[in-house]
Amino acid sequence: VQGATGYIDTNYEGKAKMALDVLNFMDFVFVHLEAPDEMGHEGNAEGKIRAIELFDEKIVGPILTKIGAFGHYRIIVLSDHPTPLDLRTHVSDPSPFAVLSSEKKENRAPGMSFNEINAKAGNLLISPGHLLMEKFIKDWKSVVG
Image (cartoon, rainbow, N blue to C red; front, side):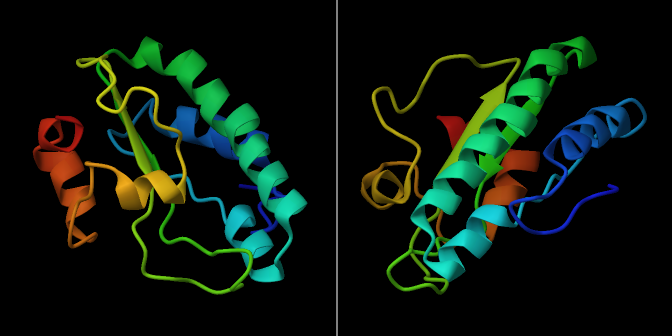
């Protein structure tokens, strides 16, 4: 994606457009955003919040608006690891994740916010974490309950 920088000034819109374009001829697309992680390494709370807001507004929102045109779909949103602002480095705590499918609409975690605190306390822990993608692809209903 032209303008993809790995930082808060990345081309968010271009990433969303490319993901949707790829789905016209592929069954799977992976969108990576490094900006929230980089803001965590810098200890930049405002930057991390803004990076997450931009991700939601310019990537997740546009994809959710248009994904229904592809028929059946499954989306997972997650981070690869937490990077707490106070530590400025990666930690091995659970990462929050959210799954949306055209087949299953109920909310398994009503009232819970999408954050690291709830990932630790919640009942959706997949351990070890490297099994999450395999479950999401092969047995996704076990991930969403």
